[in-house]
Amino acid sequence: MTRAATAVVAVLAACGGASGGGAGAGGGSLANRSPEPVRACPAATATFVAHFDQHAQRWLLPLRGDPLDAIDVTVPAYATLDAATAQAARLPPPPATLWMDGGDGSWCKATPAAVYRSLWNDGPVGFEYGVELDTACRAPNLLAKENDVRVAVAAPTPPAGCRVDTAETAVSMRTVEWNQSNNTFVGPADVPPPKGLAAAWSAPRQACTGSCLTLWAVDAITSRGKPAVWSIVQTWVTPDGTDLCQSQADGAYAMAVAEPSGDVARIGATGGSAGEVEQGVDEDPFSVLSDDGGARVVVTTVEGAYTTYEAARPGSGARHVQFGFPNEEDFAGRHQLGPYCGP
Image (cartoon, rainbow, N blue to C red):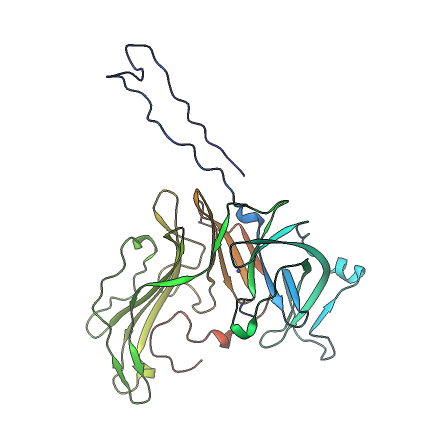
């Protein structure tokens, strides 16, 4: 597995007399404004991530993880729990009703069933706990590489008017084609940095001058025709012509969201200046939930964890769930653009 209040603003028009501040000629009336669109998407606190499990052959809603120092080799990789064991796991209560993104613009109903426990042991050892979902949602075609992760929202009825976008496209790229076998490389194209992302753009800890190369790769999830959330990878590298694996490199990774005002703001603590984050294990943008009022919720994921954010208040996550324990070696070379020479 690759491991992701309704408010109506009424505008009151002032109606003055024939003279003075009325709506007649020469008057200074309030501008006519359309009501703010009614919010169709649930809040970030009501947004979850479900995944399809091959052991169980069903959709699961992870709720938390429990790291372990060691594990008995007889413990099954996957099991449902009896009532007493489930109660001892002290899981947060799941929503009574969920609606999962069907991947085609539809929503399908899912309800919590048995509590499960799943073993992670490819790297750090730990248990994933959550609930199985009773649902008619179609299983992903894993042979066709369909995504086995879905957004799910807690709501009594399907969130009509709320849509989920997950496709990420390249926005701007200035990269190098490295050939470590003979210590050569093809330099980057002379392209300017993308506009409008200054609030999320990082600076190197040391000036990048001389033979130092400034590199970046920017992708975005587009929602309703506009970029809604960006992932920004930056690397500053001074190539070593005799051994590329000895090149000096610095890097930064950030995510940013388009606020309703049109401004761009970092989301979460992932950004920071160069070197402030443990690159490679950070979350990536996974999906954007939007309605007629624009982007409402942003979901970011990494294997074994996810965070949800209100697009209008992106400073900190509304919901963060850490449920798995991936092998960090699987993330080697991620979120960096310098020559990769192994973990």
